[in-house]
Image 1 (cartoon, rainbow, N blue to C red):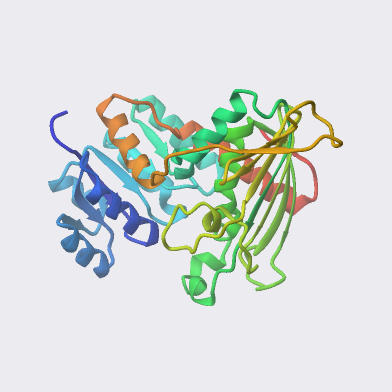
Image 2 (image 1 turned 90 degrees about the vertical axis):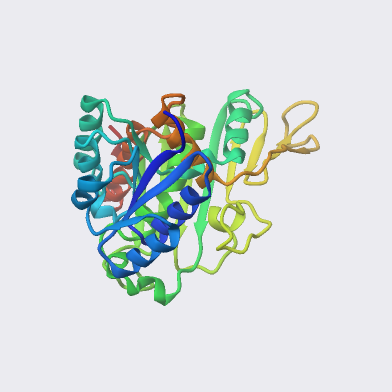
Amino acid sequence: MVGPVKLAVLGAGLIGKRHIEYVVADAAAALVAVVDPLPAAEMLARQSGCRWFSDFAGMMQSETPDGVIVATPNQLHVTHALACVSAGLPVLVEKPIADDVASATMLVEAAERAGVPLLVGHHKRHNPLVREAKRAIDEGRLGDIVAAHGSCWFYKPPEYFETSWRREKGGGPVFINLIHDVDLFRHLLGEVVSVQALESNARRGYPVEDSGAVLLRFASGALATLNVSDTIVAPWSWELTSGESAAFTQTPESCYMIGGTRGSLTIPHLDVWFNPTRPSWLEPLSRERLSVDARDPLALQIDNFCAVIRGTAEPVVSGREGLATLRVIAAVKEAALTGRVVAVA
């Protein structure tokens, strides 16, 4: 392939606008189309120096990109991604890959049959600090992983819920936010085999949850707890601790703790705590902060998508990986509904 990779973005909402910005800024990519029926999208396309189309079919009649980013509402991910697969276009679909496991499975299998690359926008895996954390764990710095904890606490203001689908099933913090934490825990700690969970909508009373507590059991025997709420004023979340997005004021706190038989790790600060002599609660603890070069994970995700399209790299987060994370989230929802321990297929 000669020249920049030509990309189209379907959906010009909050995350779609961010993708558009990153594609425009990436020397390896060229934004050729924005696809969204709203008039504001036409203005955005003009400002971004590309063509605007109200729908995918209209774009395909006059513009053929090398790849497509699907950033439409969750309920439309599968429909739009399948259209891309049918057209033979590599596709990066925002998380969640779908709003149910059956349709996600159908999409993944369709892409595999067609030989079309399918990537999922769990962009946090691209963050260099996540790569460094995984390296430390895989190299045995922490010993055998025993337990982990993650907090996902923040307060979404009333205007956030003026968009109606955010008040309905599938629009709550489990699907929108906690899915990122589950994906990172899978990436760092291995596959989840069972789930227990509780949810509550007591604060806002919307049909969708505003808080949740999750217990994960991993194939290794490790246990993890995850706690999410979009109605708590607090500094402990990936959004507020990682410095990943300028939209949030960064706090000096950690959101994850991962513990093993030889040491523990905090994320995002990458502090490794250990006993210099032998593991014992009677021995003094030492701390080493791992170093990492900060880079924007959304930009790295665009780079990976372009490299996959060129055939020079594999997806960092494939359709299969997105499906596996969605299976855990589906188990979380079932466990919260039934009160049972739910096995993850």
